[in-house]
Image (tube, rainbow, N blue to C red; front, side, top):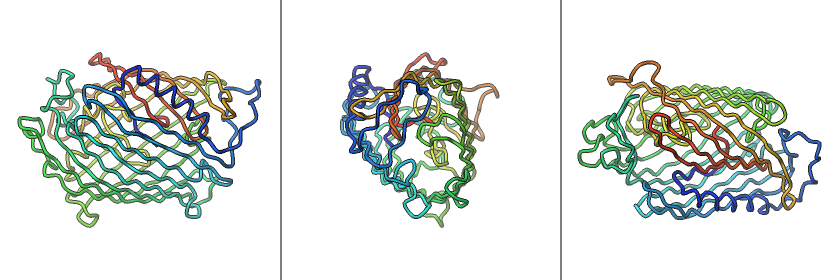
Length: 408
């Protein structure tokens, strides 16, 4: 429910993770569970509660060379009730500022089974980036890039208020794996390129900025045993999005997203998780959409905490994107802390991604961009905390991510 903090110093990550563990264990109104049996397998799901609250509150205080000093706060809460799975209401709120004039604020709501069997999802947000990354289109863009993300040559100024609504349901019953959804999103993007920047030189479609309204629809086949922290099963998705003058958009384009997520339990402690994503855009696509994918859980990249970890955010962009993520998750132990069950573990992962864009050099077919790393996990019911360290073998540079919820 809450986005990542990229580039945080290790001491900030350690203190924040310790604070989060304490908050997860104490910030709940639900009655305590009985202590787990010592004979239970670590990979088993903790016993679900029928009511109560999980709440997470974190300050944002950090520094990195890209954003400067970051300050503000994030908060998330899950409210549980009988007959509502995985929870009755999910709410997240963020207010974030940086010393270099960047802002990211949002309010999100998720209501499974809110309107009969329908799930309602809402989001209001405002983003402002004084240095939004743009390296040009294609799989081998900006070959002279030396790793300094703050260069004006590879950035531009962007402001983008937006809103989002989606209805999702199971037309053949709650126990059936088939799901469908429809939705609408709207965003107004202000673009201000730097002189002599890659964006100013290329002047791609979208440099004028403007509104992008999108109609969305999709279907899923979901056999996961648990939506928030799955151990077995999987979910396949086909998603469509259309943007045209009739949808309140300045640009006319369409997109198709194909996604596969699969989970295998390897004994009592290990889970192998795999994701494959292919996203294709057609038509008059503005450059700021090149990095976005569709679907229930949208991603951006190639590069960043939601596509290929270890690579600079949105390092490679184009009309067609493909990436794969493989994680070996380890559930080390579970315990009760002040009456609250928590599962602790770790993960090792390999990410791969690449793009194709018309009219530019995309390199040979085998030119995929890798990211490798490891991380820690804490899970309590629907609340999952992840801390990842990742490295790009191509550049040798490392990055850190603190986020809530599994990557997939």
